[in-house]
Image 1 (cartoon, rainbow, N blue to C red):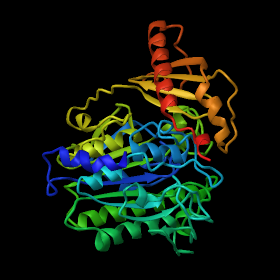
Image 2: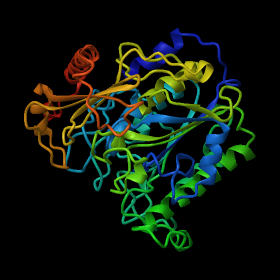
Image 3: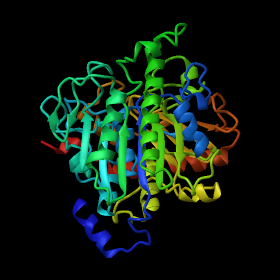
Length: 454
């Protein structure tokens, strides 16, 4: 697939030029709950920089991660495909073959072929080929000109991490806190390393507030009456780091021509439901609390400041949205699951050809779709493995499983997912059940079988 992308771009014209193509900046938090920013009602955190970003642009109430754990969400962001379709069933570990395959076409590859300078800064967690990390390709193999990354989480914690790698070279211990190290590198790239004749795509992946947490003592001291005050200090430290990056964009006079997106890879792991906006569930679970995330997009002149939307959208939509904004054609002969959000920016409405979809074998429910205000949940018909570590031998059972114990919820009236309406609305239930089964089979038929690799 990668070999045909440049040919597609040579044969296809688009109206935007490098002078008018917007810069694109994605900022992804790690394990940040849907209620962990003050603009989303956090009773504990003060996040003025991200709050201002929301005031300056569009704030979603129903924005979704692509999974309830890290790696699958990142795969969907990179590919615009449901994560299992892209071959990433769960979080990537050193003991696995699983990674983001080079055969996938990524957002960075498409934008790079469309004239963009590209950089990835921060957590990768999709595999790269260092002996102490996973065996998959690194960000350069997926279209990033420049990268600073960790294979998984910042180690041994966010403070003085020792596992950052820059363009293939391990750095050893780096002094400071991981979000500020990421912000430093992003600012340095903007100043010193990017091709300033090109628009840029900057993919920034913070580690906060994933465990093991660490944050500056003065931020921890702001939260004396809560369990794990470092968690909240991490979020406020990340907000400060995001603010530094936004300030740099302003100093470069790039604000008006820059599309900025902020969100998270899954819900919070904390059991305090306030972190996930009092929604049911948390990280690793496909209830709303495990998959709903903050979603903020700023694009001056295209998005009116102070806009709010309850239209469902998510990480899987970012690739088609970025390509539409840049005027870059989508890849041919690739099943994309996301939808461009540009019509939503213009009209407040969005037509989605297929429901949003999630599958994660340790979770119960194991599969979820969302279509408009409605979601359908289901458990596996057979007893799928529920252990945390994914093993390739699970794939056989995963591919053949059917569902049982369906539940239908109207999320507009029942965000807590307490009222099953499958019997009261049998027509809708039958329609959505058919949608789920058809979409699930389509995804599973394409999902890569890692057992085929020797």
